[in-house]
Image (cartoon, rainbow over all chains, first blue to last red; front, side, top):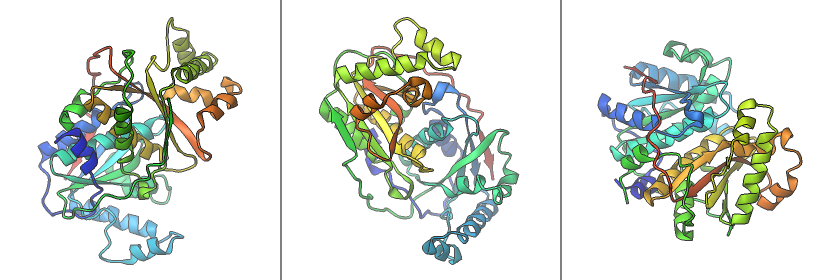
Length: 184
Length: 187
């Protein structure tokens, strides 16, 4: 797949087939993430790949509990729906973690996530970045939901990425091209 | 156009550039790739200041260098003191990547855009390097930079996250080592 096809063709995928992802494929995709540039080559990132159904469902439950407290009525309404799955019932969920005391770790983790989403597409996998796990991790009342994941000391969950074979082909979202100033 | 995996594996941060300027078409392709990145709730909380005016790039470079020299962090000031050190590497094109202030996802979203830009540039034979030292301009030690910042026309409510250098590479650095022991698999 050419660079252009990957960048132009990538979509955030929110509906996946049940089909699981082979470990070698998952490994290659995460490897691509680790090839991203990062401040001082500190590589202050860590990836926790979850394929265990019960764990993913438990995280979805925690996210819905969090959403139920929202001031946004549509977020609350979604949290009450049985057919709403904040991690989209994806076969794999990656917790992208970064070092808490590194001011560049949000940036570096996102650079890695960009590579992961494009390398995934090259292998016919869809992906979606989901912020809720990061939001929950930063909230003292919800952090315990991550107790069983052996997140390394000094690291925090920044966000999650869902991965799986797409069961939808969404149209591109609109882009605002008035976001550039040129000096020449 | 190279393969996406070749781009991911072959991309390097480039710190030495040829004088040759990149075309407006190439610059537009890079910026377009950036804007195709995903962003939280599709808010696109980014703004790009694309500079090919050599005098402005030189002014920016010198201001960053001076500010780095006054940084109380010894690593940063020692870097600035190095002979012929140029924080923007004499790159012919510099894009200031700016993000919405006080937004929890703007750093993530801008970085997703930045990585698309680096890969799209690579596909056209153009090298790139993100420069976080540009943030020295915002430091208290930098003194009053309001005149320069006004000249850059960073929109109200946005803040520069870093400078992003682009140009044709005049070096071929080897891959930096990577620690692959950074994954846990569960299930």
